[in-house]
Image 1 (cartoon, helix red, strand yellow):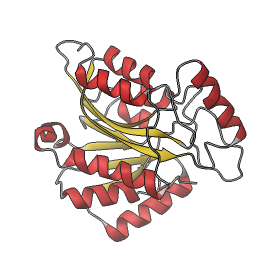
Image 2 (cartoon, rainbow, N blue to C red):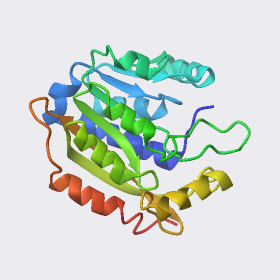
Image 3 (cartoon, helix red, strand yellow):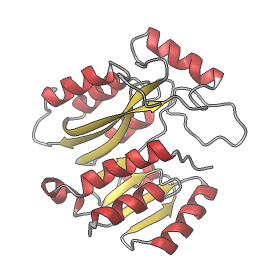
Length: 241
């Protein structure tokens, strides 16, 4: 089952469009963009179409049902430079020709016990899939980072891998049924007690973060990373009604 939430998916789509429309980043996207977890395919269909990019964008989806749905949608509605491929993104990543990757990876620190629930488990901290992406060989990474999923650990891992933050934007997200699942909720509270999750009563922050890796040297945390860490550790200053 593919995950699709209108608010979160639309925000992800807008973040990808922002990336694809940035002239300064075009040297990194011109060779193609890979996507982890195409899901329904809707966010990237919209982002690629609105940005009018000529870059080839290829999504990877390992869930058979989600892949078939996304494949049908992309074939019906285009654009032609966005395609969805069945398979494991990480198997492909080791030999990828693209220099850029985008993703709204699974980031829940627990697995919802609901029949038919999509795979939203991001590891014990909710950050393992994100950190695995950062460990790949891409020069430009745009990933959604949640304040409930060890965001400070993610930023530290990005720095360790030689990335520096070049752009970020945040949006408050209301807690949905998957976050409120008893097992997931207990895990979020446990992470909060350990200083690894930050949220307010009704929700948390989701950030679209873009990093660039300079192969000549590892960048120390710059001002953008420091400010982003402060924002994410605030959790959610305001959550829409």
